[in-house]
Image (cartoon, rainbow, N blue to C red):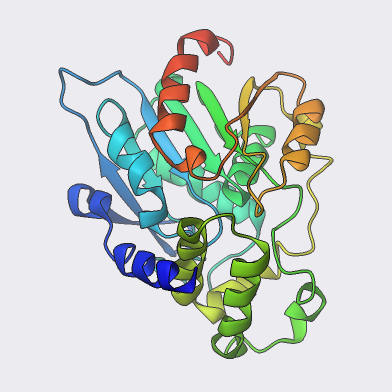
Length: 290
């Protein structure tokens, strides 16, 4: 498995979507810059919807390449990179916490003048939970929220959670081998999934991770889900070790207006399979959130 992961890591060093997309650094209200990648389909193939993609914690673009390359055929895409990622212009004066993450999304929507009646907000893992928080706070009202495995708490190795506050950020570099072991042994079903997570770990910025992680690692969001008034599309992957489908099923029971679908694997939730699923469900959700 290690040899396969090494080959895949080399593959994930290049993102086809990044080559094709337009990259912009947008300045937020606290002067932190956020990178967004955007693309538009050919006019003759455009379906009229903007797909606003909010990936999980520190996720790298190559992890979503199959998804993005297929989606860009008919969706206008805005790929949002939150402030813990290497691309952000994050400083010691930058604001932190879930409310700030959600406000970043709102400010990007406003700066790009996106029509929310044509907006599909797609979030994975903590990115999905941040969309939920934005819905509850009425910061945006998309045509369709698509939430892939939204956790009720930030996914983090339990053995390290108690030590986050006292761990110097520079220790992340030393701890990376332990993180790789945790990913391979406990949180990956396939070499491809392991390679995606390891690439994210390798690019991790210890300073950003600690400052932002401190405001997420101890929070629980079970009380937030029942407050969602929007109709949402919940997607799980029952065989995904990183994202427990039992949590997504519980979230489904807490959000009264939700449609639940199990796509079985992490690969399916990052590929053409989920894009086709969204295309199929768009007409069914027409008008439900407006």
